[in-house]
Length: 347
Image (cartoon, rainbow, N blue to C red):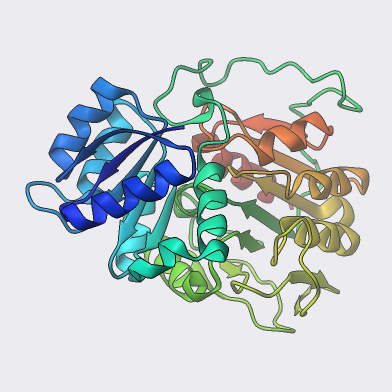
């Protein structure tokens, strides 16, 4: 794994370089500001960039945005203080993850370093073709059904309308979810429930950020509240979000596939309650969460929209759903909101 380390602190750069070398990463370069990082990214072709936020000449968020336009590569923003503003500005710029700078002695704590390495490897586990800005098939290019899929992907949309939309996302999801929701009108006729893999302490800020970016009303979920049109309910950071008899149910159940909340649990519970009048949307993310849930929705007569490879930051979850036969249709991110409006208008 080739890493470019960007930080205006010589001490922090040395600590990060030592950390990466000890874990068998190849540190190909270091930079003290975002402007130099942009040039080094193109010249050195790293697989990962760790990027400080507060730097002279050009800060980490500005640099990340330009990197995504010129040579897209996973960028992990490392900030001294991760506020909601920093976190969601970084996601909007295209950062794969945001990490708060730890106390220096934690770089020698095995539990911490193992978790951090897993997190970093996660954002570079997908092939480059799945990242924004990489060479990919043109949007709208026909996607052949995999041999493992139980039936071919179909463009048919449900004729009878829907009563609920459920959305799941992980890595790259904050911006992808915002892209879909911000394109929907305030009078969108059915409720929407969202599970986004995110640290628990940032879930409230995530909901407030979406609320400010969308015409829809967005808020964190509370138990027993109804799902109504014009409203988006977001799962709290560490509580499973389920649907039961048309209402929200939060429980303290176990992790599913190492996730809590889990997209699969939301999708499967909603499929049980809504059957053919449910639409599931699975967006960018690492791993397989949501794939089985998409299958459950289709098996009960519902409809699923899966984000395509070309527009996914990480084509893990959408790919898994497609391979299982869980995709009713595969769409570029920019076309999903229009399809939701079309389907919802039939109710």
